[in-house]
Image 1 (cartoon, rainbow, N blue to C red):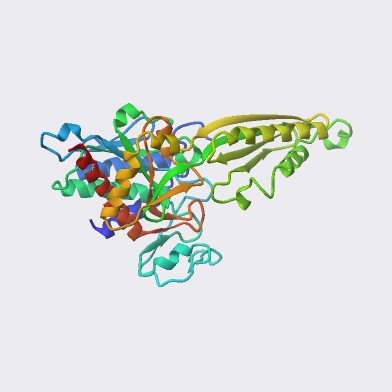
Image 2 (tube, one colour):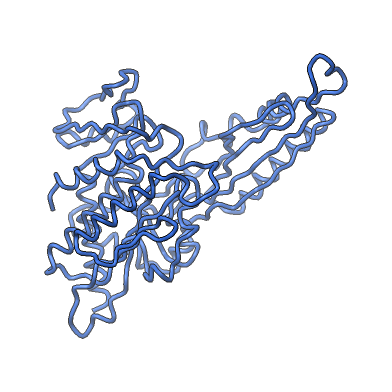
Length: 417
């Protein structure tokens, strides 16, 4: 494998603006995802994957054909590797200018276009173990897009490596690139029958050598606060200000607990993340997260209690709470077929690395895929500090992930032989 080629892929992909748009009612939500998908189809075909296609929804599918030719070939299950094309709407994703730091000397990294943006060792202690490696950052005015274009580049390089080295034994491998994962729609349009895999691996995890085997369960709540608008010159006794009521409601939410600013580990939270509206109506979007799925219903009831209290304190205001399911903890689904995780751990150990089972305070396409019946743990892909101007990636960790994906494919051959 050419490390330089992997870097060039990554740099090429992050320059395409694929920012997901949460308020757009189409899939994919942004044209850049279609552009990147077309680019990948062309590259996959150039690699030799003749069935590479982008479907009507922008999802990219391709097959790396099996190299097993003996009598056991039919016993080798098809496996899939998946990454998502979109990037987070929480930071700008247009005009990304990747900065390559070779032979990282240690210490803080000041980003060139905005010296106020500093990737510090204090906030990124993993940097202490990466001296001498190649790091990639943005220039400080955009996110980098390593979430999840590091995964895209890793899967593309894996496919190229396997087609260039037919002596490496592996079964059928499906390449899957989804859209709009960052806004919870990643697999909404994915047909699992077309994927046709027994297990799947997402390449969307932080750092190196980690296997996410548990995620948050997630719901999204919308609180609609309705008031009465009238010209302020004649408002006395008539106006009901939804903005003031919404402020009162938000202030009633927990501050010293159940908030992402004060929780860690296995603690869940209620997170108001967007407010829109005016005097007549305000909409508040909230994330409900916990590893223990039943607690989401408790959090929703807390919101309804706060809504009722706000209606009592602000005469004339009405408050509506709606809750939409997003994804569920992948833990239980993975337990139904432990091979997906076990073979990934064994493959990594054979490469001389110690695998780490991790729990992620978020979700992946694998959360939904596992819930849908396709066991899908999430693998480390060299990305760090996602969704921010301080996002960065480590090229050597990405290279190790390519080796890992190849070794996983080989381990499934052994299991089927």
